[in-house]
Image (tube, rainbow, N blue to C red; front, side, top):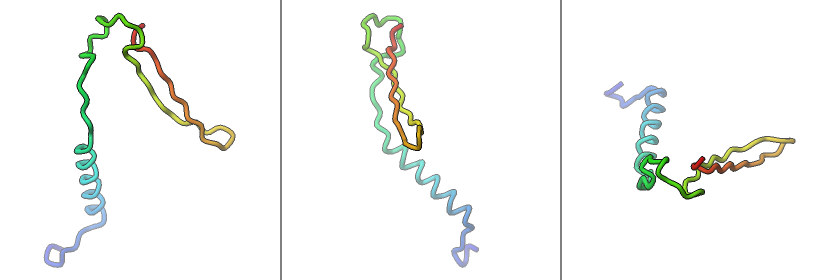
Amino acid sequence: MKENNIQAEYVKRMRRKILIKQNRNKNIIKYPDLVNRNFNDIKERFSILFTDVTYLIWNGKKHYQSTIIDGIY
């Protein structure tokens, strides 16, 4: 196989997946951790927000739902 430069399909797919993962990691934007995990020290409401976006299929149509929760209890 080496002499004829032949590769199995699963090896080609595996190498493609590895290359895609490597490229994804290069494009990640890293933001500074402004909270530093000290959630108890923060007193101002709405300074820390948690969010999630999901979609629901209802009556054959796709609807998006965005939930925003205040991080201060």
